[in-house]
Length: 534
Ligand code: FRU
Image (cartoon, rainbow, N blue to C red; front, side, top):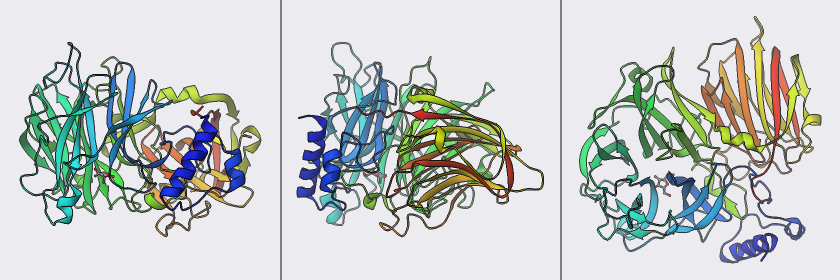
């Protein structure tokens, strides 16, 4: 079967088995080719078909970045979870692999992580090769229905063939839920150099639990963190805990990423973080960071509404040294009803995280990984100019849909707190804006006129905003647009915003705008990008 026929067969099967919310028109089907359905991201990871949520088991081994993900192969909405699987040699181009983990008698396969067991501490390796060990939550839906509280616990599986096949460990679960905590999930495991043990962090309702193990099979509780810190507007999920160097210093700090649903600054799902120290037993907040997360306050890795459950890759080689992250590019407030027919949702672009000491305290900065530069097909310099009104860039970027990267620097004018940014639009008058409002000192994403909004009243209620960290006169916007998403890395990654949208015809016009005052566009460059799916 060629890819077009495969796509058609998948649609038909999918629509027979489930009620598709948006069946494709017959003429659309004829023209449809692989990964080119309406709203299909062209350079982001998305599953070929059906439902996806959190990234899982992100581990680098033998030249491959593994990306597992929460997957339900029988529908485009959430259901009994499996681990889908893909690999990449550059985090940009992906090869789909068969489902890695299926539900079993202990339950569905919820979120988790994977590591290389370099020294075969688990004894699960073969032929002198280190095994890959995945650790995940099992969710027993029957037990939940029966009113029990201990229906989530942590299990492991191992692979001795570069992640191609997985065997569940006979002694599962390795971390049982003896206290009966209802939300007891999302294990992230790593090797702690300091204590020479495996370190596990997972979420337990309103805090995280830290455990340790010599062999990934026998686990001991170390400590708890978080009940009295950060935002608690919803349940805590998908933590990650790792050491990271403070840029430009010899100092190392520990960062705890923590997803929360709902309770994010712009509504629904979001990921906050904490900066502190870890002594092999306890994670403690850095005193300078504590005020930022006291009394329900949070500091967020991405202020857009569509970056959730993100964690970092394990086992990135020391000579690379980056801390690499990606998240689920959606939000539980509307993720199950977004208007895509064949599949649901994508991942964010992969990002390198760095920690910097700023005037506000320690902050994580996010930058798109340099591997993405391979997507650039043409470079369009944008000349320096004053902007009051709009500057149409459409002539330079003629592709439809627009697949675009922009790097722009704006100089704010004395006494003119302008509101400026980038606008995407189509002939139907639908438009999306992402920019900076100097009067409010906020970046924002505005999808209130971006096309289909009817699927959820939670999707586009007003502008979504992010505080600006930098106080520099020059505001830098680094942006990626991919059919149905925008990602902003502002001021060299100090503020990130990721949002999705669903225009009824592809956006094919791009403009720079400034209102409520003028602004000087200092220098800029745009890149046309190519798609990753062949
Ligand atoms: C986060 C989450 C996790 C859970 C998984 C289930 O989005 O709720 O806490 O393991 O999704 O699919």
